[in-house]
Length: 98
Image (cartoon, rainbow, N blue to C red; front, side, top):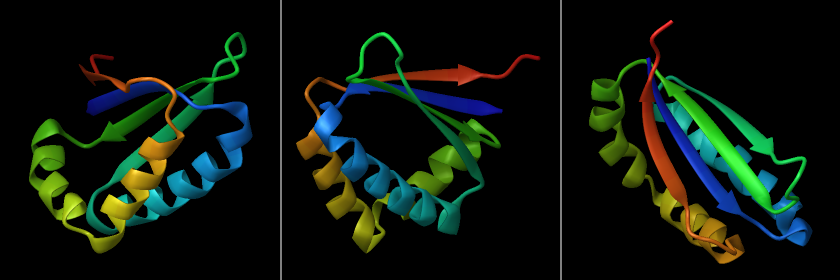
């Protein structure tokens, strides 16, 4: 299993917009790839969010990502997401071992 982890900061007043964007992005991803995503909000820092997405394999992810990125709605949603950010996005790749 291939796992992507993203961490970023969003102002608390933008949480509702973030959830709307995430739901729409999730629907687009589901059209192209088998994905399960968990979205976590820090209990210590109310601006800190972590997304953990699980994919069948890195190969599947790499093959399907160009299709996802060419979807007409995904670029607009990403622009809306970027407008909410108050930090850089930290991205990490993992593989499941157990």
